[in-house]
Amino acid sequence: MTHPKTERTLVIVKPDGIQRALIGEIMKRYERLGLKLVGLKMMVPTESMIENHYLIDPNWKKNVGEKAIASYVKKGETPPNSDPIKVAEAVVENLKKYMTSGPVIAMVWEGAHAVELVRKITGGTEPRSAGVGTIRGDFVLDSYQMADGDARAIRNLIHASGTIPEAQKEIPLWFSHTELISYRVPHEATLYDADMRSLIG
Ligand code: GDP
Ligand code: MG
Image (cartoon, rainbow, N blue to C red; front, side, top):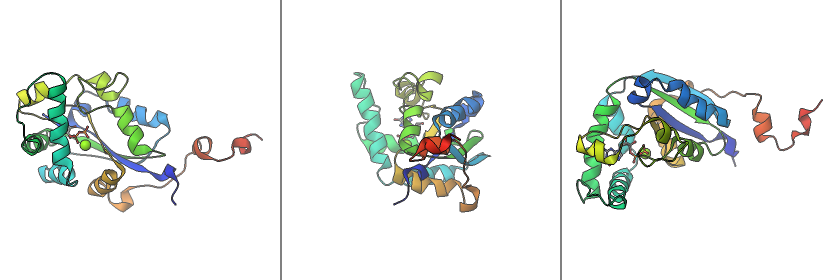
């Protein structure tokens, strides 16, 4: 069995994250947790890259549509459409415009529970309801209501893989094998060594 410390996840600082000058703030959050950066690049994505990225998971449309509708219902508001697939199709079109509107930074972070912990720090999809202390909750204020009303994607600064299988499919879309670097940092001994007594002289 591979050790949990080898888990990897994809993070993308979206165009609004770059424009808001939050690159360092965002990277700091993952880095200080103990995760290790193993891949990094800046680019302006193409629309086909964004379509491939979001449609790589066959369940994504259904999940996105249902999540959006549930969010409206919870707030006592009316969703723009009651069919989750229709909602998701509009989201994909809006995402293509949003994600190709400027440079993004793609990163791969490695460490135990990387997928789950990056999602926890990043916060929920909608900044309006994302938890206090999360990046999306603390640094931006967008909502389903505002974004759908203006026919655009929710501006939430970051993409982060939702599950381990999603991360495994997404990472190769953004990074070739040789662009991901395996290396060690000293604090991994404190995080992961079974016996810490080796640390005293
Ligand atoms: P994430 O994993 O939290 O990023 O969320 P999803 O994978 O469900 O959706 C991908 C991205 O599409 C989100 O980060 C938002 O930018 C955008 N988005 C998702 N759902 C909606 C929606 O219902 N309306 C709008 N306008 N944008 C959405
Ligand atoms: Mg997602």
